[in-house]
View 1 (cartoon, rainbow over the protein chains, first blue to last red):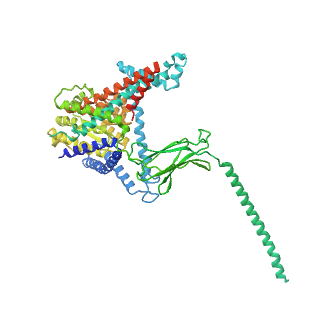
View 2 (cartoon, one colour):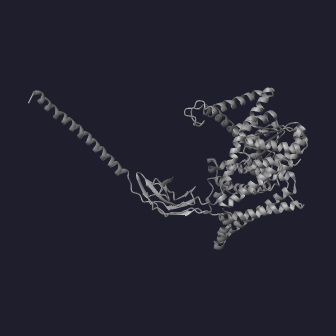
View 3 (tube, rainbow over the protein chains, first blue to last red):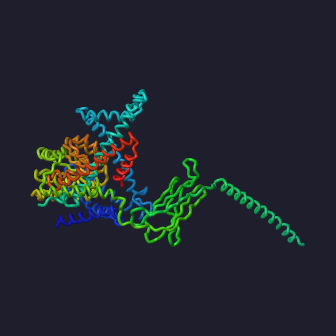
Length: 224
Length: 414
């Protein structure tokens, strides 16, 4: 029964959602189920928060490696939870949003959390540089094509690229670097992207049917 | 006349005089102000033409809750030099209640009124507005939204879905009957055994990252189906698995999946809830934590399978930096180049969805993959036909080719 009930729910909801696309009187079912999912997800947050506290308390109690970080995690969690639940620094009434300016929750979010997130995001620039260095090494034919295409697109986005080939006659204007860059993006790149997108669409259909029909059950575990 | 009488007599005219002067002044100021106001009105008020040809029609293929309005904009609504600053749409119900339902920008010529009652009737009028001026269209005749039971506008989608779905059913049935089905080799999935073996040899953990989306994303579901297969092997080899997640529901589902796999492998005692841990819903908070786990624990193998966004490269590069063998997969085309650059193997788009069936080698699941190929054949045939027809049109200006191309476009447009 542990596997049959989830499968029965999957089959029922799956077919209902397919039907809702073609029959207007039930067309809002998709939104309704999505709303139900959001409600369940909110309750599941208690599980996640509880798990976070349990794991870090255990780490602290056992003095496991890097246990000091657990103090920071738990401290941050409790501070934000308290500031949000008690609405510390609330400039209005009880109904005021925790994001209102002047609240402790909002102040910590704006002055600590947002800069930390931005710092992580900024790391991307360095990772792009190191990944590009590896990807664009002309070690084989495919990598060489990639390198040449990337070089043209980069040059095409700069004034230098336009200047370098501006002397070309009108009849050869397709070979000007900015035009070549546009051609690569609009034809070669777009064709590849579309092929991938068509494959993804069909993959989603096949995967969904496997789940709905119960052919795919590995997410429920194999029968023991 | 006494002195006092005389005095009072002489005081009254003075007061009267002051009052008259004051009143005159006040009235004159008011009158000047009035004139100024009138003058301002005469400067700012404009005369504008109303919107015309207002037409209300039933919204096609809905549950009787929408009406479409379309009109010709005011002739004074011109780009740059036009006087019209916007439009207001008014609804009149059958009990004569008028409500303003929309304020639209200049240039607007249509509006869809939603959440209506199919048992009521509605009339509409639209006004063009300018500085202080307003010009109204005629009010339309009352109309009720109609319910349609079937959306015939999606017939083409229904037919395509029927063909692809039918093909998948057919090949699943073929698989059940034991027909040998060929599925091309997928390098990323062939490497799963090696990746798990490497972790066993090195005695280091496996890190499994299912993306940052919740269970309502099919990529997360695909990731968990792969996890089910991978976890069985992990249980067999007795390796440590770490799975930090960004959603509570994914945590619960992943625990169930791993637990069931450990049971299936005959090692339920080796399973622990700590294998899957919730970090945070916040994108970069999650990335920071996972990067920390990678740097501290130096996993031998990293699986990055699911829905990824800007964090894809940060995670993949950190994994690369710690020397892990990485198998990545996502259905987000924008993130694929990052995975290809930083990971050892990448499952491109559909391969992510095919992975579980491929790893299981079950005939029924492989049959579903074969059925997918029918969809690809349809797509390829349509693309080739479209390219040929477009070429013929360019070369010959053929009208019949243009008509055929129109039909082809219609067949694949919803």
